[in-house]
Length: 429
Image (tube, rainbow, N blue to C red; front, side):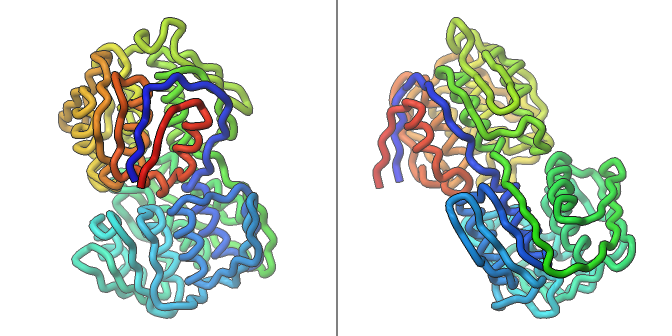
């Protein structure tokens, strides 16, 4: 699909999308819950739908589904098939692999698209320590595992992604029969682990966080017929694009974002404050717009995105309109996303007249020079497509986005939401 964004002034009220981080964790917890779980405000992104398919393969049953909730029944890990497919979800593969390993049956784990090229060496290194046999494709998908996982005191490397730890914490929470400790070296994206622990606590698990250096998982009473309700949060990752759009191109009100959330990407608020946007953060809504004299008054900022690397794309779109050179830390976290985002952002924003320099772990964005309307490509990366669309709102001419349907991975309503905010756009194909 090709989407053309016309320069537009935005206005209106919009409800943020649902969080796929929240939805996928809820699906995993519902699978592990011996009983019935009702998930409110469920997501409909490709990653969310993949998570629902995975838990069905692993033994859960969708007993009811409506617009605003889905009800899941489970009796634990009882695979209904021999292969589960996580789509393109990095969280899905890293979280559900240890959970699938709780089964005594062999399971083949696969994915699609960019997930097939992302490294999975972690499982080769850790699973044998937990009595799980594994056959992988040189550290890539597909992999075959055969459990059951036996929780043990282990040490893992947390530098590549916190998502591996999320899966182990959930699997250990279900299987632990005595206190067990996971020690973590160089953990990244700590707020995402806070989010995982928050969900686990909601579902009755007992985990002690020892300053992110180790996690003590205590056994819990195994009860049956638990009835649990969980409401999926609004998504700060997707909401960040809406907030940046307003800072660049108008004034809007965004609802549905929990300002007390542990989601890492809530940190976008600090960047928006630092760059000089007009922002009012309230309990149930955020009002945000360009400075009183327009986006020409936005100023360059310094931001550490090491723990929230998904913010790089909206931050770059924002920085393109900020006078001066914006410095963003954490580039080393970008290589193994849906695309190599450091290089992809440099390439696509270069087409729009924005110079981006990569220096070790730093990204330097030279802003305030004027954004040019151009033909760009998503590289099949949802966040690249959204970043280009937002940057195009005040470009010198139309911005044409190829493979624009990539947004379906996390935020399928994105273009509809832009349209609702008075953005002129067309979609073909």
